[in-house]
Figure 1: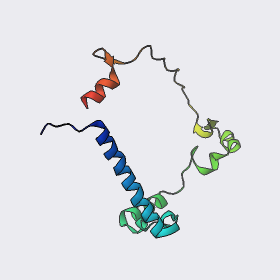
Figure 2: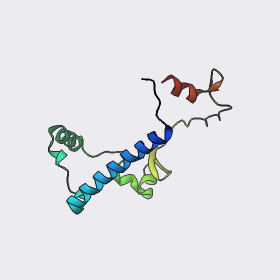
Figure 3: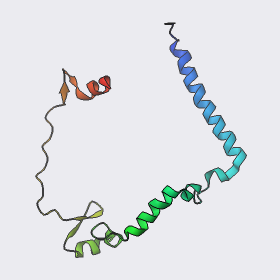
Figure 4: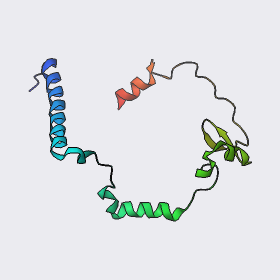
Length: 123
């Protein structure tokens, strides 16, 4: 009780576990061949919860507005009076644009240390 393990031993054990998982994966990959990387439909889609999700998406119908598939083209987006094409996407026009945000003057400090250090330490 209370004994410490040398850092080299713990490091070797950590990498040994990693190599063990890699070897198990390689053995599975060699035994299954290229079937392990199949891109067919998963069996999970037969689950009722997943089927309900896809039924909800189908019932919701086609999305309308600036985010639909038709507005992916820049000309179609710009021809719509309510949309504008910016940063590679069609977005709704801002009626009242917000002012640019102010740059932060200094780091957020907590008890003399940067806040992220305190948050991580307290967690």
